[in-house]
Image (cartoon, rainbow, N blue to C red; front, side, top):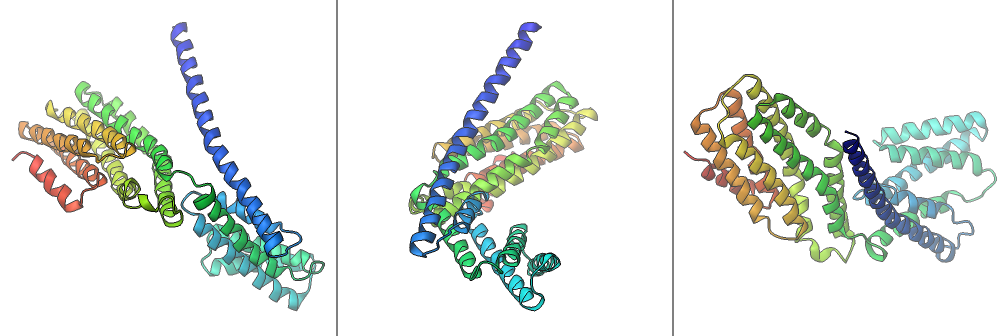
Length: 371
């Protein structure tokens, strides 16, 4: 018992160390990008625009890089819009009511309300409020503050985009592979667990798989963000243009059907629990079909990561449909028929994720399902 506990502790420490090393590697790249973007923004503001105190441009550059990958162009636009709203409200009000503590409160309140009226995101609202504070507090002592603040937003945001897309770009394929691994591994593991639960007629094991699958929102969101980042990279970075019609486009097209496969798997698992609890028949081919779906998901990830056409994943997905059809012919109850239907639907999602059209995927699923 003590040896088992010691082994588990050592395994946990090793996994934690690997996670920290991975975070440091990813963080080091982001830190290098942020440092380079700050330097570039400072030099442009100081030397090209003759700004003696280029503070805002580096701040905007770092703030842009802090946005999620795939949302940095949007972050630049939001920064500029928020600053414009803050300047407009701050200047107009200060002209009529002057400066002071209560005027500062009124300026900030109205800047936030103006940003909300224009449908601003939290980033726009924050920038509008921050800029209004600067205008209300510094305008009496610092002349011509508005134009440098506005220009610095363009300089800083543009510097961040140049660094991330041209000077120090990330490999978008590596980023998206790293994000896809936990999401697809989670899906495969819970399908495999459900297959074992059907074999053992263990509803508790299936319920555990269902709870774990419900906690996969972070993994799915990470994959979605990575796909958006890949799209942004292929739009901005000349190094990625040649990949637009390659693996990155496959991943981008796969994000939505993978998300659908997650949801359909949730239904499959819930009905598997009911099927076991109601003591419905579990024909032998049915757990095999669910296990084949799990292996198809694993192959899909590996073939995508290797830049190969996922033909083996398609083959296993169709084999899963065939086995589900055999189970249906042998006889299943109400929940069992729903599980069979979800095997078909999930297999169709995986076929679409592999690059097929929805019509072709549906036709292949119908053909694989025995009469």
